[in-house]
Image 1: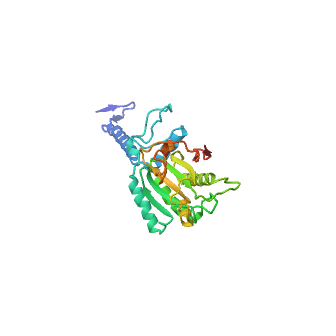
Image 2: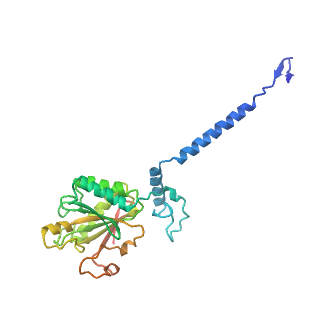
Image 3: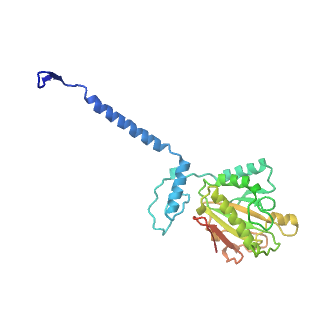
Length: 280
């Protein structure tokens, strides 16, 4: 219906004004659903890295289980906020198969061996002419491709990782390393630092120096001593006991309960979240 305005002109009502409001509502709904869709297809790898950083900033650690982020007993932290859907779990036998294939493809099986025992997957890397120079704890550049491959396979796992340094029985006495304990611990610490720099979460890494106390072979020939000079990267099973109760496979002639006894020959070193090395 038309109505008159002052001056005698007629004003016609716009019968389709409701379309403007309807179009605005449709536009807002479309923007809302686009936003929801973009959130549902987020980059999970980047999200997990951000979650690790945030959780570490509040003094907590991240482990596997029902949630990616969860509170440690007695930590005083709140309840878990990231559901299981964001957790990246991969069977250890797949990691073992991939690393074994890498070693065979690159023809380094004599220097890099991958096995699996009751503790988890053990990646044993020869120290001689591979990881370190004699009497040194500085990683050689020849070992970088192997360690990068290891870091690539383990950095997305929730498992704890123990780095074990081993030496032969030839004594060492230098200003830097008074004994094989210090040398083995320093080598393990160098490996921890390298893996942390390649994206493995520091809270998941432990470094242990065993010195000459856990040989793979008898120290009766140079070939056997070379096999004993090594670093073992142990990807622990999720249900493994604490680090203090961890031990290598029982050696012939050793008591069966040796893992439950105090060991004065054990040096533990770890990399704290601020990048410094601590020891006990």
